[in-house]
Image: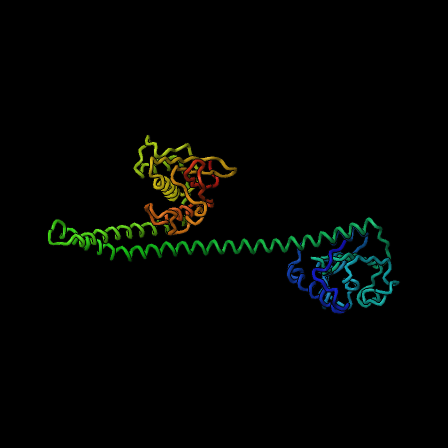
Length: 415
């Protein structure tokens, strides 16, 4: 059964319907680029069609508003002719197959130039429409210069071949779309790489520009604090102001360091074999936790292909967060499980937990789920940059029985 036309034209006159259908056909022919890039597979289709019909000639005709384009042919050279001279254009809008044993005796074709001898001497003629999205755009046509009879089984095979032509055109369109998407993805990847480089350069420059005046202010405040220390003629409020200023400068210096680390990490990778167990043990030591200290428990972890510096920063951030948000008898556990073609690494704590509404936004820069804990809201954002740079994903979820599980998943490139 043929597909119905894509749009409702029931209220239009026959001439208007024909014009609308022709316009739709032209649009589809242009969208599918049928006349620009003819798939090589179509040559095989017309050869098979001629063999099935038992005739020497076959062609794929694409019919536009004003012309017939033979995009593939066997038994003669493909060409272009006016639509009004086309045999296949006759009855095309009906979208039904046509079989004529002798075109010279058929009133629809006997005066056609392809029958009369002006352009050809066709006698046997058969076509099957090519229906694309409910609109006929052309035909698969087989013909001969002598009369023939085409039995039902051969007609069915011609119809099947016509359907395969439409499938090929659709696959070609999808392939072009996929290629364009891949090309755009590569462009976006390059753009992201440039943006990361610019971000790192910008952060480095800002850090450098801020460091000098910040150092000068710090030195001045420290000198003033030393001069006023122990003096009875200095109001207590002045010392409080100095202490407040020094604490603020210390926080600002820490924030600058964090921003610089955020910009640098997650950029270009230098992959090598990384034993995550060794990385976790080193991170634990950096946090001042001894091997036998129950605050951090490390289960056996896998070996991966990763950037060792960035993976260490990732694990240390997650372990540090677990300790920070578990102030009462903290205990943080890091473990790994195989997850199909990847490793799932989990860092679990028994802290106060996190509101489910915050599990996504805490990965945004400068967002803090809790303001009563130290930090600037950059650690988890840095973790996400590192994991994404390695092609993985990361998240947070509540832990059963209380607490939080921070997890990340990386490809199991190495076992």
